[in-house]
Length: 108
Image (cartoon, rainbow, N blue to C red):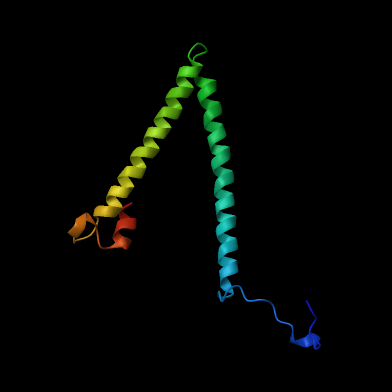
C-alpha cells in the first residue's frame, strides 16, 4: 500500500463504527471470564481430590461416579428449572411465553 504523503493525516482504523469503550468492555469481559475459569478449575480439582481422599479404599470408583452423576443431575435440573422460570415469568401467558425478560432473568 502506498504511504500517505502527509504523515500527520494518518488515523487509526475504526473498529466497524463501534464506540471506543467497546474495547474496554470486551477486555474486561474476557478478563472476568478468565478469572472465573481459573477459580472454577481450581475448585473443581479440589473437589475431585477430596472425593477420592474421603472415599473408602474399596469404593473409590463408585464414590467418584456418584459425585459426577450428582453433579450432572444438578446441572441438568438447574438448567431446566431456570429455563422454565425464564419462560413463564410475566403476566401474559399468550403462546406460553412470559413477556418481561427482566423479571424472567431476575427469577432465575
